[in-house]
Image (cartoon, rainbow, N blue to C red):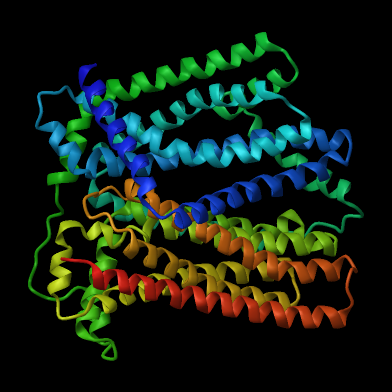
Length: 559
């Protein structure tokens, strides 16, 4: 199609110009960012590599588990790709100003939707592929695989991502078309009630597993029986996993079968999405632009405004901005639903620890699991902070001058967003890590120190995103995914991940050395004091440093 050629020719030129503009930055900045990226990829490679080496040391059982982890990895990746495409397609195909411009041109609805479908697939897939390559490189290193494995991975991943992208975009279009906006609120509340009921059910019915004598018995009784759901032959994760395993065993004819199965299903679901777009895409787009909820306004303040009107210790302009930010966030279900889903999944896992029997494992493994739970909570918080907090200033767009004329300085504007987002993050992450520590029955020292770290993380990660959002604003873009995909968003993600890795490693190391009896209790006490001081100093320096840099950047910003 001519329109497709023109659109992506222009976008390739924009991308080329952005890549050329990298040379305009200082060499020190390029070196630091490049070093951080290399360190991040090394970390993503090193941790799975050590885990795979341990499993390999278990013999044939370990090799079976390693291969089964491949199915689990691609199942999780498939579900995340679908969800990511739902979010990105909503922003790109319905909310972006570019879409309205396309509808003003003499184009078929399927042509517009095809462009947005490709946009969604590219934006959602490249990040996952970048994280997938180091993990599977660790797998390849342990299994001693050659270059053909990496080439096969890229070839298999493309149709795999197309299937997830087509399903995600199709689900978004159908939901917008056929689910009335008035019903969304009741649907969300119903899901919340079911989730809470399920959590209480897990707590009441969970039974602690018996103590396991060694790691092999624990794996046999707690992990392998739960791998069955990842091997459904009707799911794409099974097709790509089987295809790669056949490549490893040099069974190329069978591998070709699974590849063709992925390609045919990718084409089929893409065709279904384009066929549906011909009839319902415009109507669904119009619903997001012009459909409203009939409501009678009598001049009274909303419940949210009434609550904040009683907080007299907060200045009136700041209260108004807080109410505005909360309303903007709450009016977009696809935005706050991501918080509910990701943190909800963590909550289900933490509550289900009793059923998995983690609290009865050997102290060595309990120590590792507790700090992995701490890392997973902070990593989830970091990724969502980059996704939502970093683009907040940029999303003010061309209306930012209104805030500049408001009776409040720019420093206060930035601090308002910092405190609001930090307190929300703290209110979600601290209960989660408390549940994890309670279910694992860790020591009180681990509980207190992990709680302190989560408090610092809630403020530090938000400060990084807020500060870099002010340093690298993009007021011309209205798509949050595109804003996050820029240099500033990538830098924020890298810094968040490095910050989490440094803190969690520093806190976990003394406990690991004590559990493995490499240090005495006296040395452990001294190390804990030093590590606690290090975490506090690093956290406070991060908070004040990035907030100061963000305030200075806003002051220099011309409105």
